Length: 239
Image 1 (tube, helix red, strand yellow):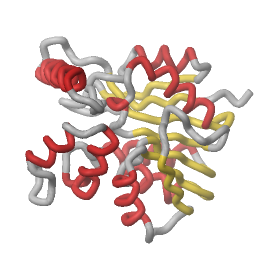
Image 2: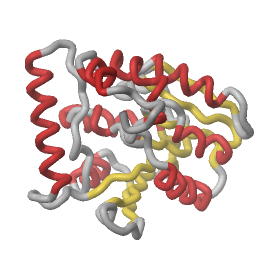
Image 3: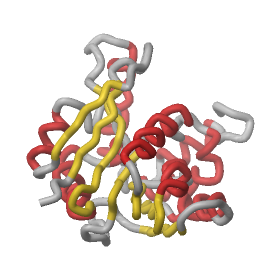
Image 4: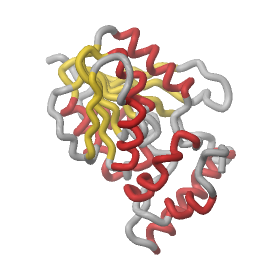
């Protein structure tokens, strides 16, 4: 499905009926052949910003998956680039892809982004395409963990957007998908946590500011259907 080397409909159904962690373990070998992987053009935009802000000693990719974010962090970090993910299957694929390469050393951590094992350790923290796995009630804790893991002056960098028009195709599809996932999670255990229309502006800006982060929002200047996307940079104050 999606690509000759991608998952079949049966494999996607099996994933959706598993727990979130187990589902991604199953999907990992074929993940890069699905639309769920962050597109290269978006990675390049974030990479260009990272290159612009100057030297980075250590960087962290949250929910690193198969390593797309680490591929742009690695050549820009002078010491280490760290990826953390709750799926051992995704980390194994990431390890195989990034064993050989130029740049700083790569460290892969099996862990929970709601309980990061780092304190004031990173100049840059990235997150791509994973906000749907964070329940709204956990978003304050998620941001607090990121703020704690940043060094003074460090930046949390990600792309999100404003909510689409209520009756747009994207909004309708997302609400239908979210409703289906709520029904699935009400009927089956363990849950599979994946929802659309999460961690969006302007609510996320207010959340970041409440955690004492300085927020900059950049228009990416993209055409349809990506006109609502923004690059968000949340900086931990130096003092």
